[in-house]
Image 1: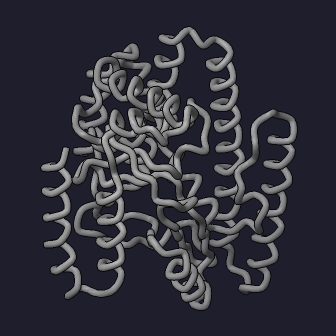
Image 2: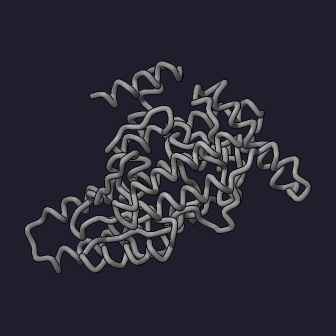
Image 3: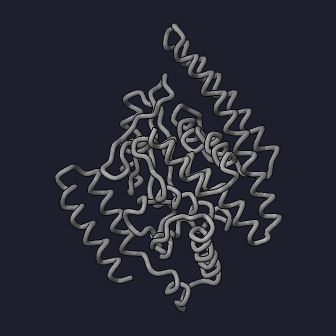
Amino acid sequence: MISMIVSGISRLVMIIVIFQLSGCYYLQAARGQMEILRKREPIDEVVAADGTSAELIEQLSVVAEARQFSIDVLGLPDNDSYRSYADLERDYVVWNIVAVPEFSLTPKRWCYPVAGCVSYRGYFSPDSARRKADSLRSKGYDVAFGGVTAYSTLGKFSDPVLNTMMHWGDADLVSVIFHELAHQLLYVKNDSGFNESFATAVEEFGMERWLESRRQADELANWRERRALRTRFSALVADARTDLGEIYETDVIDDEKRRLKRERLLVLADDANTLFADSESIAPAWLADELNNARLASTTLYHGRLPEFRMLLAQCDNDLPCFYDEARRLADE
């Protein structure tokens, strides 16, 4: 483990030196990643430590079981990711920004050396993220800004489980691990919609098998209900996007477009709040704020192509090697 940490930090030191020539954004990203690498500890050592709480020991035991399950049953990468734990001593690991023009549904994209072009910008400092968000708003963008509790380097480093993830229940914790490992299995540069929908499909299938294997019938029923709720919510967002797209193409003055946009987003907010009020699930936090194009784009990234991947999995009779092969074929098209 020590050699793995030294190797990872050595590579990162080289990256920092290079990125010092490229601007402050990459420098803060490299420093943030170094903090994560420096603070990670093997899970078995954390569990054995005298000061570790019983609650954390139980959570990390679930992580270890899920990690092995991800290899044995789901065919996800067998590497050092999620075999260590890092306490960052804060509530979020990064703060993400999504920005979309006022009369558009296409998010602004940022390009990175490893991830390619994606529809978000992440900062390890909330103040830096807020300044960037304010700058984008001043240029007329709709902006979504918020803290993120999970973080992945797509397997470029050995990602640890973070303290920011420990506020969730076991099902949410395990599902995120499956999701992030799916990115390591298949990731298409410059296509956030493909990547997130594929990983969500793997996450869904994995959770079905995980909860079934543990004979957690009540948890499985609850998880299926939440999945169905997310599907209905995604349908509401898709309908709103269709209507907004038509509004933005309408040949009327901008003030009229703003009025029509505002009215349609208010309808979406009302419909979504009604949907969640009739269930035991908690509504997404961003529904409490004023809706805009960026908040819709954030949701669409994870579910825009999900029906396509669900159908692909069904066509493979739920055989994961077949599904992965077909997904790779789609990625190559």
